[in-house]
Length: 210
Image (cartoon, rainbow, N blue to C red; front, side):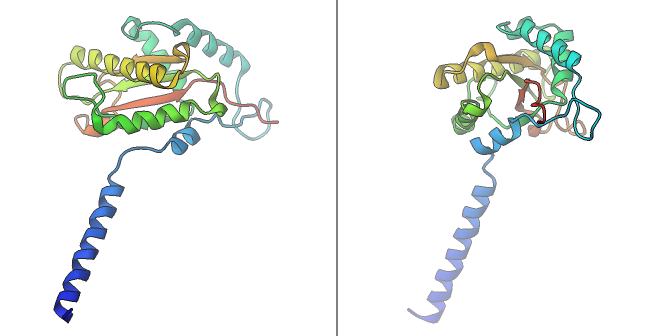
């Protein structure tokens, strides 16, 4: 092999390696272990000592509200109920997942099947057994408000159905809600694709520190 040919082979090999690296870096599938870590409740304290504290009365009220929306059809939730779910979720363990759907559809795209499977694996973990999760659908700002609201609700329902049918998760522990384009991840760029996502929230009270 001549020196020029040898250098050409090295150049092509380096280019292929860089391309493979870019492809891997661009993969938006979040592994189950990362989802699990994000959704695990964080330790809290109940006294006046340092650390995250929880008011038992607030926990009881939140639990009662979440029980009231179990097994509800997504589209039956009122604006006030959707807002309350969002407020409770503020301080709960959560993760945003880029799960793509077919155009103008609630069908999960083939490219996002693995992303939903990783979510199923994480929610099936024994450490999360008995937890209640909110599956919140979000869209970008392209399109009308009513259209996006309906689309976000149907897509959240699709994720729930997949998790129940494929992973045997208890549907009563999966509360679905749609927010349409009302709660963008990037408020400064409401039409950006990053706003199209499914947010998963562990609504269980945080674990008290020993």
